[in-house]
Length: 127
Image (tube, rainbow, N blue to C red; front, side):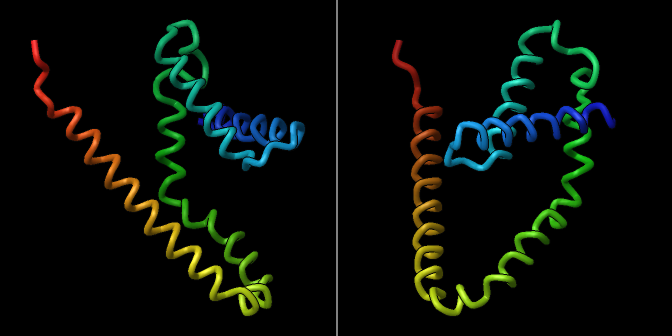
């Protein structure tokens, strides 16, 4: 379990190093998550990679163990918001408008994507 957790954290570290080293406008953990996804897809495709912490669904079990404690990861973000209360007081209305627009836009795109994919899947193929 510790070795599998090390794989997850190592992917996050590599993502952070790449983002900071190249100055990419992307959070390091997002790139790390992409690296972890690529690693797991490669593990499922190539039997040679299914060794050590990547075998027997080790990474999946670690992620299931971390999931119930996901709310703890929002504590630093909450502290950051409290530290920037004067910024919220100054630009609060603009921030709220952007949040409302972005959530509405995201929901609409998600619904349209779901409808498009469901139509493509349920379409009978002409032979």
